[in-house]
Length: 181
Image (tube, rainbow, N blue to C red; front, side, top):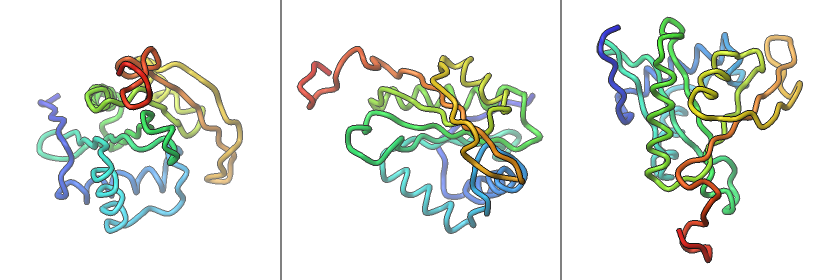
């Protein structure tokens, strides 16, 4: 495999990201969206994440964006501010080459640097063994399954929940909450 570059996402990457995600929406079960968002919507989502202080990376192979990963707010209420949810998507031709794991590892490291304490993976479709496996390999533990919560392609799908501590995790309380940071 040629040298893989993982770098922060730039606006120029958004057409490729939109294409990668559209394929997953139309043909995969990793996302429960049913209609692919257009470039304008993907740009809006990207800007909201960056403005919110969340990391967003692309994987570039031979000059082309082949995958991306980002962290987002797990839930909107303030008590969840140290918990993020991760998302990782790849072009189908690049599956099973270690790119998803490299993206996830970079995302984890960056989230730790930014002071987040927990990362949640909400994996669409319990049959998605590759995603469950890469998360387990990166230190996530299974916390549960929500059976039959999504209907896509004429069948009911589960979501698998996995979690990983970041940095000090729950061993300390970040400053400003009466803790030691």
